[in-house]
Length: 274
Image 1: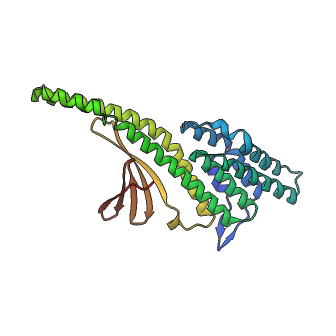
Image 2: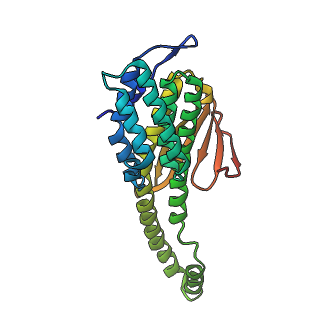
Image 3: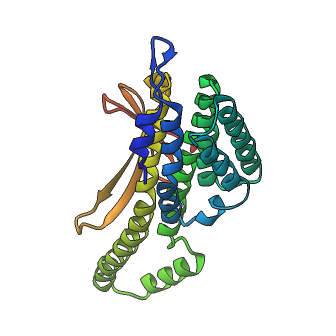
């Protein structure tokens, strides 16, 4: 079974505006070999992994596999790759889940690369990258909403009632207990989200490395880093997706808002852009 790193190494590198021939069969075999990685990734994301093992997508991979046979001539190999691209396009048209859209776009991009169109390949890999980032942000947004489950009208009314009829000393002790309960609840929700996000972040890094090998400048291909914060009781209290957009600037997303951060320490909160 191939890994994302094997796929990166099989992607031809652009040197002085020209792509170095790394061997098309090696790239095809590496792409086909990442099926296990794809299924593991979708499993972590709670997506239906079997949808990539049937229908048009599965047929496209079958064409790619046929193109790697030693008996294939160059023309036959290219025809099989074109057929694979048509089936992946068909699969993409019927797909709505952003994680699976990303994996299909990755296949389309590498098909275009194998057909000698690096520009088209970069565009498809850019789409694969963006769709995966959307999935990453959706997971954090969902977890942050679940984390804030106390924003409930009935619960808020009950708390006001208790506060009105409770002494300040008892109320203070109650707040400490409530904070501990909330902290543990938040920790459980965020750790579950983090377990889903970390494999996806690794995949996003892999797609980024492929885009760089295909000649895209690092300044136009941001890097995404998932970080987390723990409180005094070692409970997970926050997850942040940091987008490194330049040498001196980054954008943080915490599930509710984006915050632009500079190396000088200045910050500016901006409206959430999805």
